[in-house]
Image (cartoon, rainbow, N blue to C red):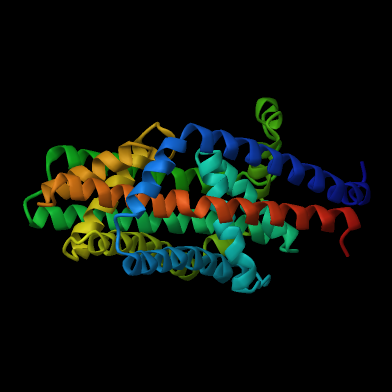
Length: 338
């Protein structure tokens, strides 16, 4: 088929793919909600125990995490000469959460959604691919640096156990392997994919698009640093959210303790084979809190509230934002693009 013919069919294929992605996410979201309905009820019960004013502060901090992620994307798109306003990127940041949670397959659902939504906004695929790769690299750079900070702090206070050192070391290997894989995929360019991978349309599309990311953007260390700072801000906002939850439950305000617990839980969830680290995050975070002198019951309640604010509360708006975005994308594809 000629390049012109491919271009004429691209909107139809894109529209069909967007509809399939929306249907898959809707089904996965429904299954997810049914399977964890008891957790949602428990979260709502815990909300009634907390001081409302501090919960509002915690929710505001969570809104800041989405703004920080979107700002990182904005920086990449500006550098790629495809600037988009923050107000257009914020809904994608929120709806990406739903995709990541509904289809927790190493973040593939969220990555595919990011590419699809950016291209529907008129962003060239190469710029969308650069946004994905650089945000992925920035995330793991920030994650690894903060993990090392956690370990150093615990070592200085003589709380760095051999098990914790082993967990952090294993995580650092993962934090190195995933960005290296992303860079390898970009460097392989548009070479044909193995037939087995070609059969899985979302994965094949994602890998193909990644290969189109411009090398000069991926190698921009200054840009990577700015995106890493945006991702570090997400971790710090989450840890501050946990510290605010302490206050909402009548406990002392201890941001340092909250940071250590959040990082311990996050590392455990990353290494866990369980989707979203359900259970493993809570166990590791509570264990860290107890080791630092926090009462078990208070620590467990605080961690469950944090998970509710970071997982359950955003799922409803993210689902509706996802549907709205998919409908808008399908409408544009149906009319054709200039």
